[in-house]
Image (cartoon, rainbow, N blue to C red; front, top):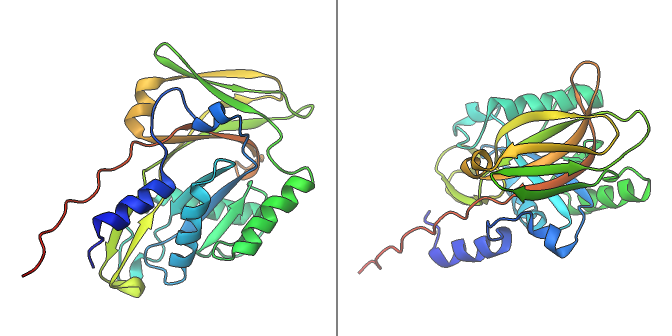
Length: 263
C-alpha cells in the first residue's frame, strides 16, 4: 500500500512543529505541560493502530509531552518492527516491575510515570491525565530550556523537600509512515509519531533549582529531544515524572516523491 503525498502532508501538519531554535515552541506560548504520555506500541500488534492514531492526536497538543516506545517482543509474529529498540522493551519491563504487574502488553500508555492504561482507550488516557493533575500528581517541577552560545541549558525549578530525580533525555524521530507487509497488520500503512530512538540520563536533581548544560550540536544531530525529571527507586526502576519539557522538535522528514499515474 502506497501512502499518498497529500495524506503524508496532512499528517505532518497535524504532528510536527518547525524545528528552529530557541525551543521548545511551547515556551514562547507560555504553555506548561500538564502531563507525559509514554506509549508502548508495536507494528506487529493488531491492537495498536487505533492507539497509534490517538497518540498522533496527543502529539499535536502543546500541553503534553508524548513519547512512543516501539517494543520488539511481537517480532516473532511475522513482522520485525522497524522502530523497535531493546532499550524501549527494557523500559516497559522496568515500569512493569515498578507497578508490580506480572506481564506487559501493547498498547500500554504510562501517564506521568505513575499510572498505566490501555493506550487505545481515549477516555481512560485523558481521564488519567486529569485525575493525576487534580490530585497533585501532575508535573510539579518546572523545566525551562534556552540557548546560550553553543550550549542548550535546561533549568529545573525547586521541588518537594528532600526531593531527588534523574534528568532523563529521550530522543525521538519525526513522524514517519511505515508500510507493513507481513504479520497481523499486513497491508496497512501507519504514520508513527515521536518514536523513541535513544534514552540517556544526563544528571541528578536534588530538589533545589539546578542547571544542566548540553552541547547544542549533539541535540541537533539526534533530532527531537524531550527532558524528563523522573524519580528512580533504589533498584533503578522508573517512578513518578515530576517535570518535563520538549527540548527540541525533530526536523520534519521530506514527503515521499509523487508517483506517476498509471495508464
